[in-house]
Image 1 (cartoon, helix red, strand yellow):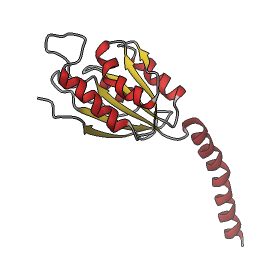
Image 2 (tube, one colour; image 1 turned 90 degrees about the vertical axis):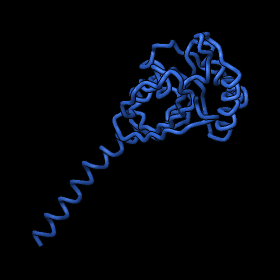
Image 3 (cartoon, helix red, strand yellow; image 1 turned 180 degrees about the vertical axis):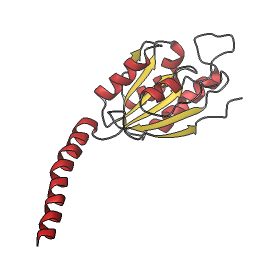
Image 4 (cartoon, helix red, strand yellow; image 1 turned 180 degrees about the horizontal axis):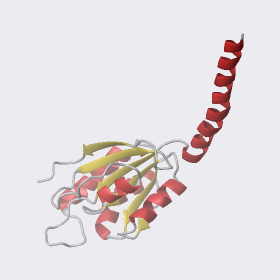
Length: 178
């Protein structure tokens, strides 16, 4: 009898401790947020802030891919090439893109988790910011994207608190980069 009481007290005590912690976790973290992170589409080798015809075609492919993904918001840095990469997608979805400063990685990630918790968001960045966005959002550390690569599409699913496990898929879209 005493053994049963001890076991019952242990189970009930565990529940009284675990349920509030589990409830706190759900309240704090909630549903996972999905970030679709891309580098801007193909740009001229001359360094212009524009897209090439291949880049414009890749932007259309992104629009087609994202059309049924349940995207709630589209973000791009304050450059023409990122804007032009996501504009066909935003237009197709009836969304107004959110512009963020090129180097404000922490700010854009914080804004996404604050404003779009549990939703799917597209973020267009650059060869030297895409990996930083992924890491800031709770993903793994990745090397910067090579200057000639434009076809990577990363899908990161992360807890809003960014302390849980994040899953990352590295996909490609459009024609392969040269």
